[in-house]
Amino acid sequence: MVNHLKKNSLNVADVLLGMCRGHVDAVNHICWQPGTNVMCTAFTDKTLSLWDPRSGLCSHTFYGHSNSCNSADFSRAPQGTSLASVDADGNLKVWDVRMVAAVQSSDVNEFPCGACSFDNSGALMTFACDSGRTLILDYFA
Image (cartoon, rainbow, N blue to C red; front, side, top):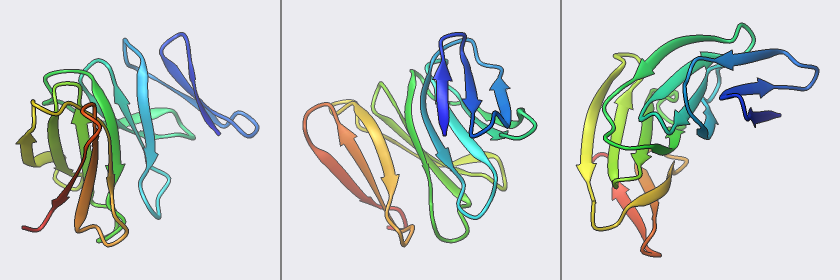
């Protein structure tokens, strides 16, 4: 179980295995990289971070969003190397976790989005928007 604490930190608990600290604001979303022990957190401080939950150490922080990161999701194929994220301004980004860099960015400001997810093939991304719409994008198009 992963839960958010009021002191801007995360607990990873069964029997408490670790605690990840380092952001100055609230955690909006947590996801796991498939086949690994890497955890990604999306924060209101406009960043995403990759963590080793057992040690509590942050291995990388991604910068580039213009507003609060609302959601993130790893692709399931190929091997969870792509990470999608969306912010409160409706900016969508795809990051290559091997290169630790943004590889794709889209702006859908007319439909601010609150959640994102890859499909099981890793080819399609879905984004839930405040307008009540769900955007479906072909990552490889």
